[in-house]
Picture 1 (cartoon, rainbow, N blue to C red):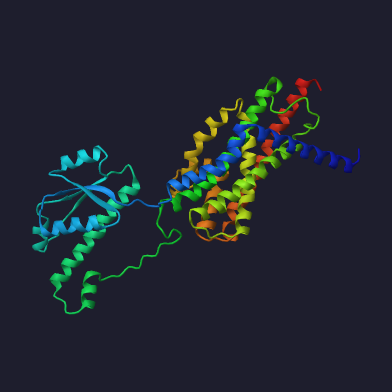
Picture 2 (spheres, one colour; picture 1 turned 60 degrees about the vertical axis):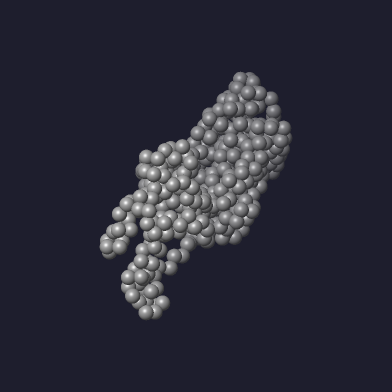
Length: 400
């Protein structure tokens, strides 16, 4: 057989396997859900939940033991802020703690009895802040409101004691050192704009791995002797052809999901979106391929349809932490950082955030892109070895 006929036969088998896999995916509700519905619908739910970006009107309880004009002014200023809502007044700290334990409030402002007395003597007054740390956004609102309003109240007291003659002197007395706060890469300071870009990229990897793994589990349940590759189809006659045919099927669906997750969802929910189309293409091409071949490699461990959910869903939260988004990368132990290098999400998430949220160019995320291509080649080779082994088993049980 000539080289031309071999190449033609190779492409014919690849296209046949691609078409066959597409039909199986469309007919399999479980696989279709993970490869299509989850990447399209799940990000909308996640982004809608965090669309407010930050929390406002967090309920707090006040224990005012001073009962002075200054304490009432502090309470009024905190209540007037957009982030805190003074819901209750308590007689003592024990009563306030009971309100926190019943989740009626998220924080306590304790104003001691000597609050106004110390300030009038020229001494430092204190306000104790107790926060429910189970929700970091609520803690941030309660604590920062107390800091801001206490600084504002203190500035007003200093101005009264200074005896200035001009407004300029009052401004210098209130704030001797001016600080210009510039919020970079996350103008709203919201939780969604910080974490959701990482979640979107992780969803792409997990959805592809879940869909490919479930398809592999289905194949093993249907074929004789629990083999991944059918032994009665003449077109399934080479590991490389099988891998590329299946990969072509998953890549088509992965391309749609990648475009939706990287461009459409951030645009719908107004997340930072600074990367251009070419930058995203340079990043998402190796990331999608690496995720596909990772899924095909993991599929060798899947004996039944449900197994892949136990494997991939279990590692979803650890993988989010290992990206360095929800937990500082510098604080991750070296051994776990080594584990994170096994997953495309580690480099894909970091590069996507730098490109889409920080405006990094292709050259600036080139190290991550190179590592993703290395992962693509490595997992492609492993997948071919796995399918070659399965191919030999299929031929053995078929008696050929």
